[in-house]
Image 1 (spheres, rainbow, N blue to C red):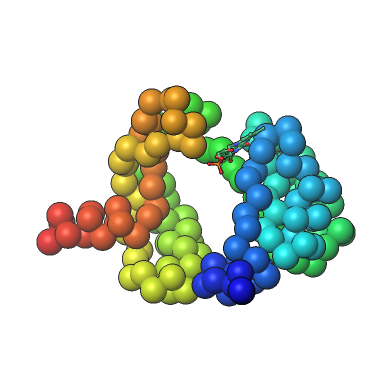
Image 2 (cartoon, rainbow, N blue to C red; image 1 turned 135 degrees about the vertical axis):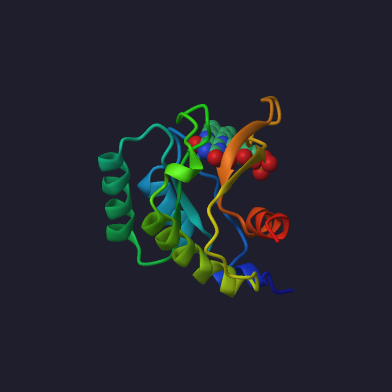
Length: 148
Ligand SMILES: Cc1cc2nc3c(=O)[nH]c(=O)nc-3n(C[C@H](O)[C@H](O)[C@H](O)COP(=O)(O)O)c2cc1C
């Protein structure tokens, strides 16, 4: 029986196993071992300042050339809500262009739309739903439908 699924091709991994980004637990050694074993290791970026995240990324790269991820925690409890209209147009375009590469690989329509607000559930079911900015295709297609 093969464990290979489309996720493997998308992420460049051997097995559809994604290690959770666990704050205080998932450091470079664990991440590199998971990726070396054919899964996707994910660095926990929770509460790490940018320099520590950079160091962790470099440490994983020293240990393996396999794909890995970085888990960032950007929900509204960690960062004050922002006014979407204040995001410079060039930044919106740059982010959307990057995301369009992933959308293309996932068979989703490309967009240059600004992100919109919608409710998002945090990973812990015990916490109430939060509002978070979203750049997802679903939200942007809903936005473009409503603006027609
Ligand atoms: C010790 C520990 C630390 C965690 N830290 C994070 C974290 O930093 N970021 C995150 O998105 N989820 C974190 N989680 C949540 C996990 O990513 C995952 O959502 C949770 O373990 C449920 O996964 P499961 O449904 O596969 O059991 C953590 C979980 C554990 C057990």
